[in-house]
Figure 1 (cartoon, one colour):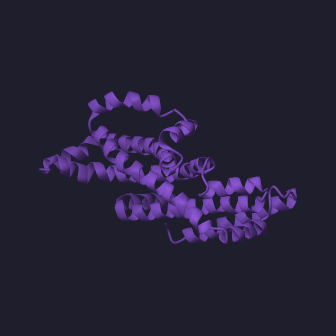
Figure 2 (cartoon, rainbow, N blue to C red):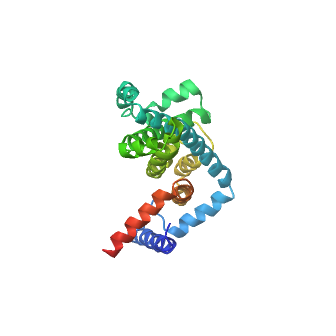
Length: 259
């Protein structure tokens, strides 16, 4: 993140908070409470095990994301470098990818039980397809001239993966993770509103049943903040794992601003 990003982030937060307050003032409806009521709801939840529920939700997202990355990265790189295998497997991907995974929740719960495994499996499937396709396409887009240049220097097959294909895959993987962070949190809400008593989705459902609109908005705002934290973590990982992609982005940004 650039040095000006924190300032812009705080400014955007202030604008959104003002809009929230203004809309609540115009509507004057308890269904859409002002930020002060949401903050009161947050304090009540804080004394009612909010930290535990946040931990349960983060664990589900974290486990699903870890498995999605561990499987999507090697499979995407392999198929991106082996067109014949990609041609064999691609039809299965294209036929199963459009299937709405959340519609299969009852099936997952019946097969895997009502514990975390079924919820993590749903999140995994949604993330896996996105990450796998992004990595495979990034590897397939590598300029053959780069591969020939590395081979001319005496590189072995592993050297190609280390110095060419993986550096091409990492930025695509992190970009796909950024895009799907919001999707994962949205699906998390759905999987936590069914047959569970922990998680942020459960808190929203419980608050809705008690008409505690302040608590609903407090949890929704907390989900947004968690998404922001995850986004910043991915930014840090990009700086550590793919600094060349960060330098390229910053160079393009400077060039655009100079124009």
